[in-house]
Amino acid sequence: MSNNERAAVITGTGMSQVGRRLMRDPLELTLDACIAAVEDAGLRKEDIDGLATYPGAGVGGAGFTGAGVVEVQDALRLNLNWFSGGPEASGQLGSVIDACAAVAAGYANHVLCFRSVWEATAAAKGKGGMGGAGGGGAGSPKASGFLEWTLPFRAYSPANWMAMMAQRHFHEYGTTREQLAMIAINARKNAAKTPYAVYKDPMSLDDYMNVRMISSPFSLYDCDVPCDGGTAIIVSRKEIAKDMKKKPIQVEAIGSAIHGRPSWDQFDDMTTMALRDAAAMLWKRTDYKPKDVEVAELYDGFSFLTLAWLEALGFCGKGESGPYVEGGARIAPDGELPLNTNGGQLSGGRLHGYGFLHEACVQLWGEGGERQVKKKHGDPKVALAAAGGGPLGGCMLLSSE
Image: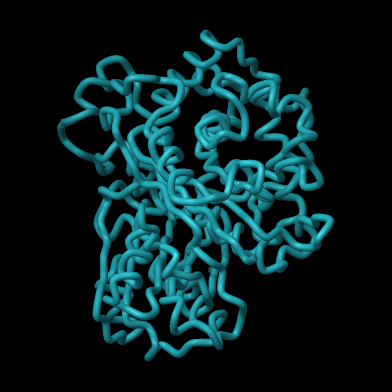
């Protein structure tokens, strides 16, 4: 199988202010991240000839998206040869995967990829928010599609749908809440060293076990933190990115497949979801193996998703993610597989997929400050970022070697 994504590299990243209820205009946050990414790559706005985003404008409830392609193109006065945006993508990283394909095909030289959210402010202003995962906007007069079948059973939220999958995993493999807690506790420890993280106060196992339940087996600390913020990534064509401001990060392989039924509640294996197929595709497209990955940024919209990604990506066997993370030492910054080094979405804030890719690049460039992972040879050389759950999943393997 040819690997055309290797024609793509990441040359810059940017992030806006991140926080709870910032009360800032969402387009402003988006542009802050985009401009920062362009500057980080040492480019000019005139160099940007591609634009990609997930999910685009007007999708989901208030706050689920901060801006779309048209708004950003107009605000930055970009001259585009290619652009893409839409909610039906392979997880939140689908727009970046699209950008890799676009530069490989020669449609564009430098694609600005962005994702912004303002869910915390939208909720504070009484505009709803947090309605994106189910596909229905806030205030919809009548449920339809998937929600038509879940609302009568009071399964209003992805917290309910994902908890059902976690409970199945507990039942089949003996996974425990004490094991699940390690994802949240590790995230909080890492967030304490991350300047933009939302929650930094120490969290003990007792804190985790005694907080209020949301949807069994999930407690409050198993659910990610709505926030406001924007993240941007520059994907460039490798052959023209030889004299950039920073050493380009190689896109080694991507995973975007879905072979099972695209459903939250009708997938053939409820303990793994669509991310199973995306992960399998990734390893078919590279000679690297799971043991070569030195830092992993794995989606934690709910803590169980991280366990599912660990299994799907082969860091442990099927059903073995609970014992794999037990005690937390293996996934700590100085452990075998440093995990979610910026605090993930459980403590860092829900930047919805892009935050994981941003952090993977930060680690490969050695820009993590207090949270920087150190290996015997120095900074990590191989990183993996993954995002999505349920019927969506996308992952990317990156290398600075």
